[in-house]
Length: 298
Image 1: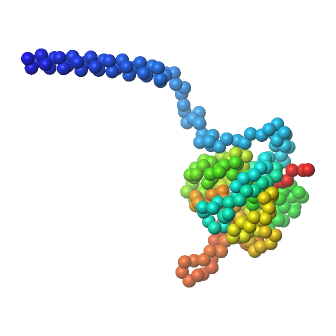
Image 2: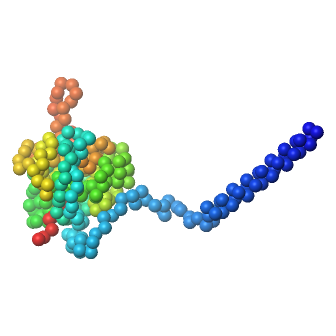
Image 3: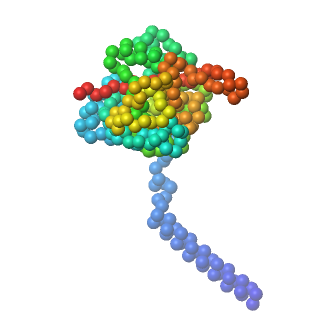
């Protein structure tokens, strides 16, 4: 009797297992292709993470403007956006709506080769023709602009932030977490600058908008936004310091945020830093360069 019960239980178990396998296999055939039907994926053919940043699409009229961009520049279609951030540093407040006109902007931060060709010397600490120029103060940049004979001006702070966003409303143009496909910063730079354009671009095709070197913009700094004009704001008419944007290769992830603002006297190439003890004022290197903008002809 004991053997008979064991035989019945074993038979039932075998029957249930067979039914289960049949159901499972039927489901697999209906839902999943066999491995032989799946395409091969290698490291070379795998989708890159920069595909999360979709290029801005232009109308035919705007594409015609884009096609006329000066060499080395891209077309930035103007529009309105919310500038600043109410939830971070005090000088990023208040959030306010800003509108900018169409303009052109350099794809890359100005390189040392380009600077040296126009100015005849190289001020940079890290040298290399395709590295961004750094250790230039605001007045140095104005001399470069003058010698460019109309081919360069600094973007306004509003233009810079609008272009850096690429239409995004996140902390960075690619999302809310740092992603090393898009930026050189303290965690991946090996404490040096890198060739301009060696990371993935933003939605407008601009490279190194976050990291590599800081970038001068044209506005005077003020410790909070005084909203004077919604359209093409230029900041205060005078001040002590100019605004610097974008972070650098030695910046933390927080400094790379699109809305982060830093200020520096136009004659300075390095930031003053107060030490913890003794309130001694030291100067530290902060790698500041720039990129050019141009207004569209009327």
